[in-house]
Image (cartoon, rainbow, N blue to C red; front, top):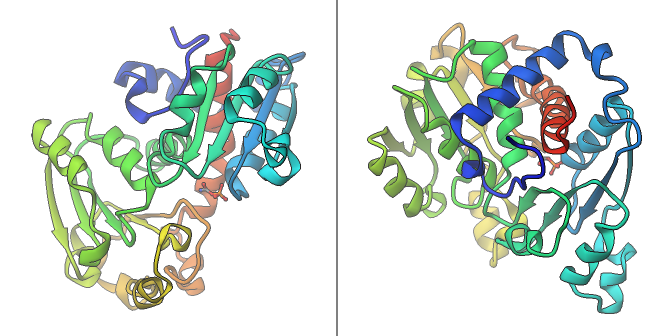
Length: 306
Ligand code: CP
């Protein structure tokens, strides 16, 4: 039962529960008109303390497409946090106005901590460099719709694997399925965190690390590109040195599989050349569309709407 639950970390939900959300999302994708009144009278609160285009707007689109309403703010300056109100008091107050909350905050662990003060389901819409579980549902739905399966895939993650929270969440989720192999392509300074490698070892998942995309691109079924997360760097010189280390272009794609799926959580800066957008394997804007569908399914499940 997902009704009334929070979604803070990807592994808050079992494989069976994620499969349930995916099945509902696929139904919504086929016949969205069947769900257009499902959340009439329900209100989503969006508490965004960090910039967002896709996550906030796709949450808002999702509740509207379900017949519900949305209230919220997109920066802390327009909330009473700017007058010194605590996050706990903000959440305790907003619970009186809404049925479910989606919160993005720059501090790791803020959603987990905030959920202690929420009487309605709280969804982590990104907490610092930690996790972004609804992006994971989005990514998984895109994988399900393009590859038709979650197992037996070679998945390459490329770019900022240290601060890229979407990478952390998706790696955890896909490691629960059989026979996936992970290829982590990053500069040494932006490697996948040690705790994730330990988790993969515990689950007997195979993975490798690489520095050059060209050397491994031919074996990938999925290539998940990521932006170097400028906002998480302490030192601008390091950011400038690393930001353009990986740029996917048509030349680099030359040796890749004909059914490769290219994903990116977006926003993109330089890491995928615009020329790649015309490649039929480029799925990142379609992925953004699936973000609405995945969030519609999640909201229905958390609200217990049949
Ligand atoms: N993918 C993603 O989280 O995008 P936004 O930062 O625009 O929400």
